[in-house]
Amino acid sequence: MSQILNFQEALELFDPQKTPLHELGLRADALRKELCGETVFFNVNAHLNPTNVCQYRCALCAFSTDRGTKRAYRMTMDEMLAKAEEAARANCSELHIVSAVDPELPYAWYVDQVRTIHQAFPQLQIKAFTAVEIAWMAEISGKSIAEVLMELRLAGLMTLPGGGAEILVDEVRKVICAKKPMSETWLEVHRTAHKLGIPSTATILYGHIETPEQRVEHLMKLRELQAETGGFMALIPLAFHPHSTPLFEGGTVSNRKTSAEDDLRMIAASRIILHNFPHIKAYWISLGIQTAQIALAYGASDLDGTVRQEKIHHDAGSKTPECLSVEEIQALIREAGRVPVERDSIYRPRNAQGMG
Ligand code: SF4
Image 1 (cartoon, protein in one colour):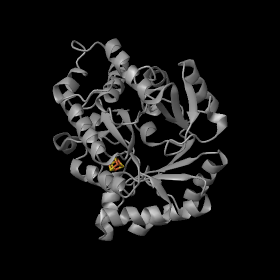
Image 2: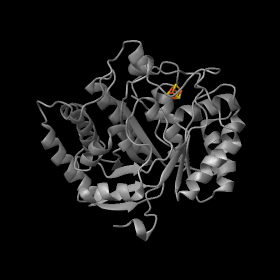
Image 3: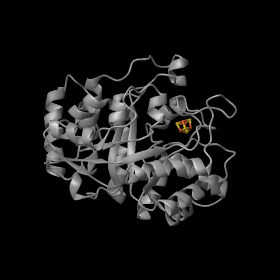
Image 4: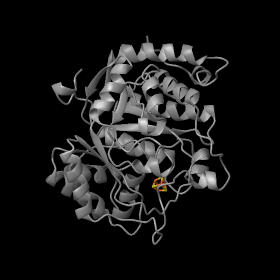
């Protein structure tokens, strides 16, 4: 049975002396089974990152750059449409759009890309813009967060992704992403979205400078917001990849990635602490395929998707393939003894073909 853990009990889940990994896994797996049986969800999706020029240049980020550098790019609307067409041809149900925050781009640039892609390819469900981008749009347009979200929804936005949460503790944010909005803004964007009936996901970026206490604080803030709104569909724990980030290049962190023990502990602890979240996602791009598969026995009930054209984690040194086929994802899930179900952006089974 699910239990609402207090701070101290939650913290003990991150202590290998107090909670051995196999015991943690068994608890998380029992809870996962109670919540969603043998089903493991995945979707067929593609990512679209229209620009990497960012004013914030977070120390955690290997993706962004300054305008005028060799790496800088900005897609035209035709290029975005070509990517969306490629996704539609590949039978994707979801297009996940996130960018960097380029102050040269007007508010209309964001709304137009959603509207244009939605009109051209209505079969693609649009999951778009981190809370950081939404807050920026409110700032440059002079509109409220609610007005921005309503306008985006009218243009065709269906859900919000969970990016930009990093660690929802400002003391940590001031080191890893000092210039972008702090925790309360991230929470406020998601709170507003949920109240407007726009569901979202949440993330936690772990394995850099944060302490176990700060991981717990982050998870508790999400749990509290979920108790208030019920709008989160899943948590996606993201293992930090230090390669090419200013945090590594400036010597704040080593080049060591998280261990499999830490990854599985993060998944399992999240499953137990976030008793009110329907799903914990094993994002294979960040975890690696083998660890993501094992995570299905540690509380995860979603493997994300086929993920065409992912850039953000690959720029940070992720060695996973750029894309998995539906057959490969189904095989990974079946090998783990579970039943693969292809879902859409809001966890509805997409068609009978993906069901088993
Ligand atoms: S993490 Fe996001 S906001 Fe921060 S620099 Fe990278 S693209 Fe910009």
